Length: 383
Image (cartoon, rainbow, N blue to C red; front, side, top):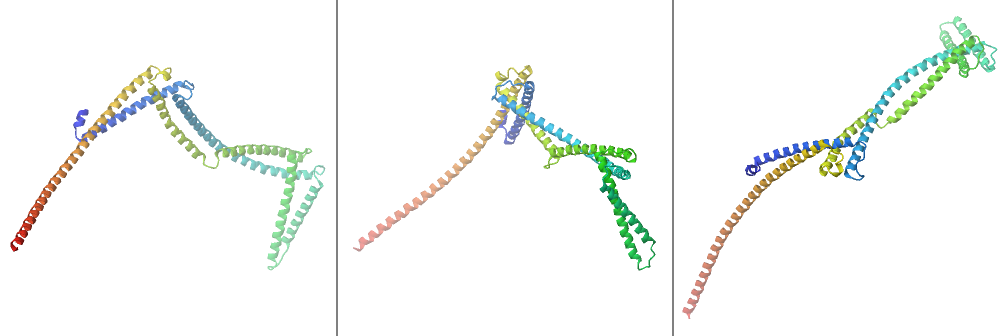
């Protein structure tokens, strides 16, 4: 085949080279695949053992593989942790929202109960815990409310002309606003008083106040427990938010980790190839002999055969290229020889020209001598 390739035209030689290169590529891929499989089988077989001396090439490759596997495992754990945090954060948001709604409803209910408790406490005149100052506040506010209500009744009963009607309405508006404020202040007084007693859980005598106080105490406990739960939930939410950080979103961090895993997994076959190549180079002796089985030696033999075929293909490529180089050199020699012939032709032509010029010179010199002889003859005759 190589002889034919040597004698074949240029295009055919290029086709032959391409075919051999394709064959070499396929053989190399097949051989590498066998070496990768061998390397993987041995690394898996070794597991966590340390069969090599520290500093040896196999030991270094094994350490590289384990480091890579550890990094992949850490990235996988990181993704799982982030995904769990995302799920938990969503759960927390829903739970916190529900608990906050419960807190709002309980707070509103407690405020109402505290108002009722405050009113009941003020009715219990013999209650020692109720200060005189609070009683004076209530009396003052009740007096203001009575005053504003009476003023409103008087204003509404007044009959005024068209010109005084606007002034009357303005006074009514003022009185209503003052009445609303006094009533609001009284509600606040009752609520603050009831809240003070319910939060401190002061023992209240039986009766209306005692009955309302029991409910207020229960609501206070529920709110305290709910507030504590919300604080704990929000703390957990802040902690997860701190893990996420502000640099990038959790989804982007997961994408980044997945990309790292993909890139690192692409490195694993390269490590298998490096480890298997060490076995091939060592021919399975000494360093690896205790690790190899019968199937591994079959792979060694097969890779050896393929290596010979690769060498043959490479040799064929080199010979065809050498034949191409020979033809190229011959073509160059032909060009040079043609140039030499051209130069020789030019030299011959130049030599012919030189001979012609030399002949002209000789003829001119002869003519000069003849003229000189003529001159000498004339001179003699005159004498």
